[in-house]
Image 1 (cartoon, rainbow, N blue to C red):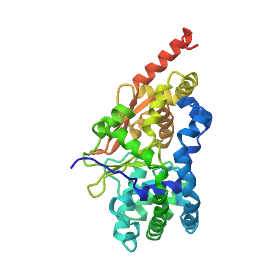
Image 2: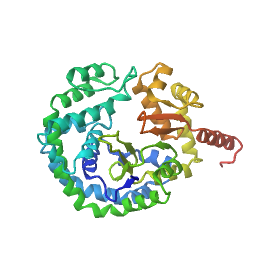
Image 3: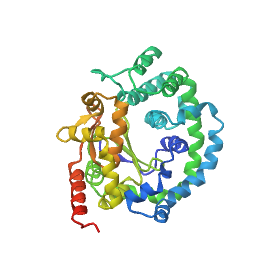
Length: 363
């Protein structure tokens, strides 16, 4: 079986991501920061994101009306130490459900899906890495794992509430998403062109492995039968869902290829140079770059080597990723881990930029 590239979004995932965008507005990033990184003025950015903005503004009033009918679900969409809590849960819902409401009364399936989701969320945050795959079978096992993650009390309480009330929460969530999907579909024509362009552009690379490596700059070791969806509301992200029932799904932001190209094109901009220098000015991040210069490592390995918590390392890695000073390799088949390494080409570009700056070639 070969890779499947779906021609429409995964509507369950988009419904959850749409609601999550209330609390995580990725389209509201600092204008100056985005201008510096992409080399675009505020007006140019407005034009670039116009279809997305129009689509979101068209659906959000109706989405909010539906969302407000489920006040008990609000805590699960809000910001926590796990910034992808709700989309991870929704992502696992999509594995076995064409109709989210089919979860009603299916406690066995809810247990299976939630266990997968929680394992995926907790695995990279464990202070002490486990030699065996973690398994959450009951509240006691969840509490044991929560003792070994660097989450604040609010996040831990949300996860405990989620597990304790899992049947009610996931059934209500499925109904919420089911009500939101027709709204998203009805207005899809507003953003459909941008999504189709993203699919067409990715298809030019022949296969998805080439697309990831040549266009986005990271290696991907993933099963041939992976299903790919292009995501509207997570337009600048890539999400790899863990395998479930011999299926694997990946979500690719519809604008991520263009955003990466713009960042590369703008790499010698003075403001971008300053941003990159700030990224490596922190002692921990400088140590990470040195550590990863000749060896790929996953998050917990880096944390152990530097005697820091995985959450702290995750914060620093994200900053380095934003400046493309580290790159990633995803082993989604075997260990299901993300490995990081220093992006030597980017570091060399930064050195060349400083050299040009001193030799007055940038002015």
